[in-house]
Image (cartoon, rainbow over all chains, first blue to last red; front, side):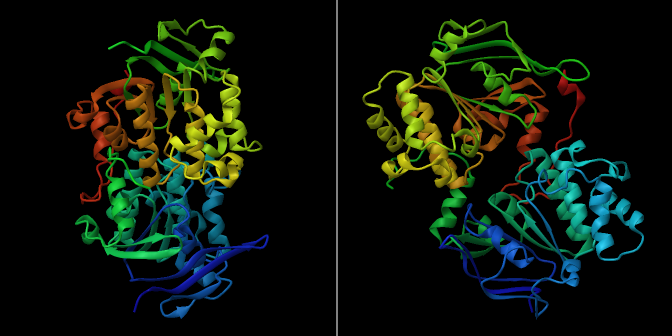
Amino acid sequence: MALIDIENLEVTFSGGGRHVRALTGVSLAVEEEDSFGIVGESGSGKSTVLRALCGLTPVTAGRISIDGKPVPSPRDQAFYRRVQMVFQDPYASLHPRHTIDRVLSEPLVIHGLDHVEKRVEQALEDVGLGAGFRFRYPHQLSGGQRQRVAIARALILEPKIILLDEPTSALDASIQAEVLNLLDRLRAQRGLTYILVSHDLAVVSHMCDRLVVMQSGEVVEELTREALQAHETTQTYTRNLLTASAGFTRSPARPR
Amino acid sequence: MSQLLTVENLRIAFPSRKGPVEVVRGVSFSLGRERLGIVGESGSGKSQTGRAILGLTPVSGTATAERLEFDGINLRNASPRQWRKLRGARMSMVMQDPKFSLNPVMTVGRQLMEAVKLHGGKTEARDKSLAMLEAVQIRDPERVMAAYPHELSGGMGQRAMIAMMLITEPDLLIADEPTSALDVTVQIEVLRILDRLVTERGMGLVFISHDLRLVATFCDRVLVMYAGRVVEELDARHMDQASHPYTRGLLNCLPTISGDTRPLPVLARDDAWLE
């Protein structure tokens, strides 16, 4: 049985008499210790899947279960011990007036864990920052260092499932490589399960064994890494994404 | 080839508590009617180089150069009046994010027509604007003319922005990460529009980007910047012949769809590159 099971997930945002159907029946199954990717363009609903999963967005219809048990709404503490999320923009996701120490110890206090000091130091060590960063503020860190802190914050509760929402798209290429390597290493060491959302096909192909392609709130195709590498795709949309990822091509006059 | 733009020994400094910090340290290049890419990571000085060409260095900074010439005009001591005649009309700039660079309380049409009116052509402003929106592949130009920037998607907004910059038919366009905020599929479409304008109108294009792979496929020539200096100049077709360790490192650290190197090679920085 799959660790994370999402069935016919629907999310509709309503406001001012308008309804926007962000997700129109998405089903996914993610196995334990799997690294699962979601690709798609902006507005395809890929981030909404993650947000709905961890309770940041109300679910309109459908089922989400972890280990065969439906997740409670609102999510309880036990849920967040198992599932944590890393957000896209490390400049926006850390409190600007909290030290790194406070950012990292807050989840420990909420969940009543002991040895706060030791755990904070260990978490910083694990993401390659070292205890010297403990009493700094986010503005004293670079983008890559901040994203490492965000990863440390997610890992400090020792969760099994990490939701990664575009974890490297705000970073430079050279820093992206470092963060991807870190995520890879942590997954191997701790047996983590990842769901990684990205618009970058190359990043998903590097990180994930299986992936789905989303378009306007739907899953249009599910692929393995091997199939993606061999360009074995049945959907025009996926093929367009693959071509676009290869760089600029001067195509002949393009009928619209 | 006649040179459209010549930059020699451009230096840009900003004051700090520890004295002035040079963010661009002696950049020289020349541009014909071609696509020149400037690549580098955040803080390498690529955007400041682009801004200095248009005289848009922030007031706190100082830009100096031995030579800064656009089509025979010395830009170093151009008066505000001369700048006004050049900017928008003969040289213009596309910024990264349409959300921040379009006026949020003016319709796209009014902003477009303002550009036309300022540089002559009052009567045909509306027709010209509609034609330009069509030229950047906007399917329903009437609707876009009447829309406010927040009513448009990122791709549409960026196309409207490009239309506004090109409506005066400039000779030189500086595009600072024009497609970084867009989806890959939209990105290619926007690049095709720019590409056509270079080939058909003979415009000179400076394309500033952090995306080495994209620049390599789009531009004719590439300058690689590191810590305020140009470390390497390359023919875009021969990126694989890059000799500087920084360029090579940048090329290698990108994950690819087909490759499966793990861990990814990371860039080991060398203090010697700063010299």
